[in-house]
Image (cartoon, rainbow, N blue to C red; front, side):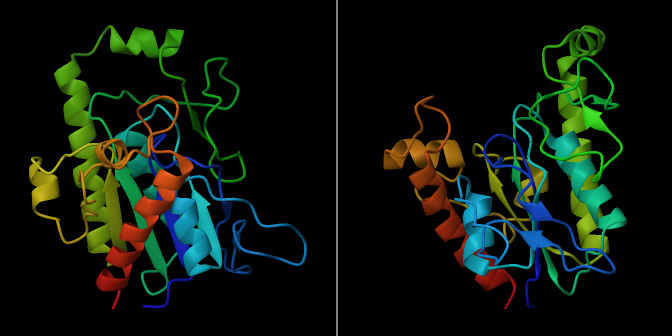
Length: 239
């Protein structure tokens, strides 16, 4: 498969701005990490951006949003595929698995509690998300059991896998931490990027001495090293 489009979502372990423009029926889209006569290419700061640069895809869009979870990841990928001109023949989907205990609340763009870390605009979707810990989030969280939040995340993950597989989209995923105990992951290890050492991105960065100043996220060199293993997985899975 010739990868022309790279569609990405995730949490802060993948976030690095919107990345470019999605493909439409009349335009191939854009990738801000490759040189263009009209602008200077951006400098990658996440594993996904390094991949977009290395593969030189025509369209790279990254919906990853810091502090958010699998419900956002599922919804943004599905909605992007439904709205824009992505096809299984030319698109690779990549995302990261994140913590199950994250509560994602959709809201409109006029909501005072909307999150400032959402990378997309009204041109992409007519909705955004509430910021974690805001009043709207707290009202919802107080009325829901943590087990229900985790189950909603698992349901979203099941829904995303089913959506991509039924439509024959190629995909790969990284993990914030080691989630290989989950049945949804165990049955899809061929699409999982199992980093070495560490499996998950946080542990990999810690073991390699490539943590950022917060001692949790990979540094930029850490993201670059992660991208090399992701690219190796992509080459094997799309042959």
